[in-house]
Length: 338
Image 1 (spheres, helix red, strand yellow):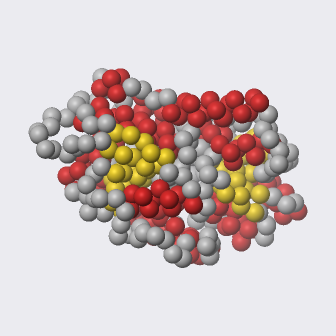
Image 2 (cartoon, rainbow, N blue to C red):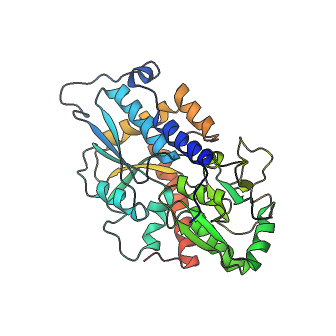
């Protein structure tokens, strides 16, 4: 196995540190007005936010910032508990089986709660009955990038390369967007791209930089740790360009076909089903108000995300619209992970 050089390793460690180094509750208090609480009101004890991925990525960064904001708003300590593994099933299961009292929350990627109901024949929880959304944090355009050992300058050239060469797509979780892109490309273009699943983005990009993996799709910030160190962007997902890569066209602009290409997922904040509606409203309000703070704006700028989180009502409406689309894509592709 090829190991990353020391410079790449230092940059990846810097990413993890930057994602974890969020502001103190005191700094957040200056930006978020504390709520007035009566004795016995929620929250009356610490709040745990389970992140279904390791520290260092966008999901973890959002969760840590949100925890700071909850602490500043309500005075009750909010902590992040990283529970990665099994395609996010471990973390999701921990929350799905928790009391519906507003003290255990979930932060994960949309694919792990939208498509997993199709990708896995049997889950230890019911995604429709055991969990409910609170808010949806945007992931922004994802970067499609290749190893410098791959001669392709855009996605169409990569597809031609993949038709004649053994290629591997790095995916930050089974069933995630990169996994589905690889599978759809194989079906529509006749390629034989193999998907390599990782626990988060950092190790994935290390292997692209070393040339062990030929292509990957992930957040701008994680990609930036290896940019110009053996990795080159050839496109971005969604319908708008990445603010940090204005000269890199979207896959849509490049003429790549497929109903998956223009879609954008997100990072849903969720709670066990049955959590009181007024608690969901309070949690949602912090997510929306917190997006207007200076620290939240800096996080979005760092990860090249132009849009803000949406609250409870809009998230519910959006889920009614897009979840059937994502599920149909998973069904049509016939992807199974067990």
